[in-house]
Image 1 (tube, one colour):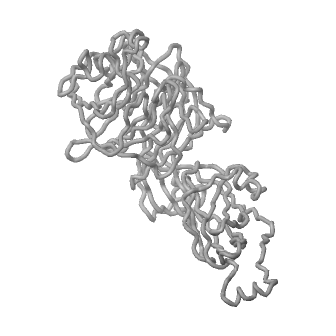
Image 2 (cartoon, helix red, strand yellow; image 1 turned 45 degrees about the vertical axis):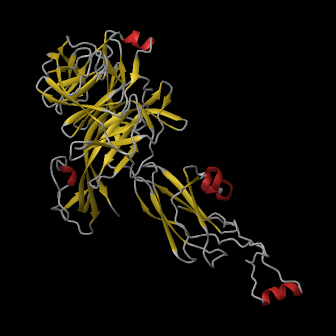
Length: 542
């Protein structure tokens, strides 16, 4: 929809009422001369249109006007957008009051030439209004252009549904998955079982001897779960433990070039509010606090703890029941100093993202604090500043991460219909690969496959902040085949009603896992279950 600005533009013309002014004209002085004030503004753009829409933004086009009406070249483009409909209804009044100025605009071309600007870093599936005005060197501006309305697309693979909740009798601290099954851990060790595919779940007790370890970070090495850090019964865990899938558990031994725990250990007598992430066939322990006493309450009350600096990164490899420790000193011109309770997850096989966290008990780290830790070919590590291709970066704390993949199948419509075509949604698209040019039916109409792409998808669940806005929920971090990272805030709906699901306030850390097409979120005495498809069909054009 286009909203026209019907105001008529007026301006003052130079008047030559005296003999002196005639002489000035004869010697080629104009209205732009220093002796005269330039009051002729650029003409108002009237053909602003939307040319392209994506899930992270949209592109607009208009014809440039000039420095003086439609001649010459204007000095500056002012492009603003808003989600408020009042921006469109009264553009002159609300252009600055309600509009957000977009900074990445080109210098205007000569009058009559087309200008295209892509507004990015917007929210998906959201309605926006946009308009422009032009300025000359003298500070004269056009009126606001016609206003365009556009709704950004939904990010593929991010439309989720809340499908159920598992109420728990006791507080549990961790979820864990081996890729085939889901387990609830600490205290005890339980397997989550679905009842006959009806959406109901029960917890089958495997072992009740696993201690109530809170704050531990769990990893899976392909055979067993390994817990690093945490506190049990008020005592910090200064020895890593492993848990087999039959519920048996034992202590891991530590060797190598780093002493992890103890009076001379890197982590002192324990570590909390940290993350463990896989990089280049090793595991890195990032962020957190280390304890100088086994007694957790004593350590906290008496200040016997410290933030873990990020100048040295402890890493380990798993060999049976041993952890082989080492320490690396990352290079790089930028690096985080110390961070408590960050979000961290693999970006690719040789690098990991470190995002957000706390710098103190009551302040969340600034939203631009996100880094990439890379393992280089010579087995050294390097910190780089990380940036998204698209997405608004929030601060995050009390978080957990769940990795998955989503297949994006892009199709174009066909004119010819054939009864021999197979319905594309009847295929097991999670397992079948499609080739460009293959023809199917989609929603009852013929289509042809344009492309197929598998994107890495990481769900980040936690508490987020942007400016004065604070909420608990889920973001999706997606990486396409070109390595471009996209961050999208998710808004799952309740399957039975279609209304948006409201998350509880995550005042404490959460735990999560993704299995099949389901995202499980454990918080306090509840497991929340959401459904996210692992494939999505995108119709490119009508």
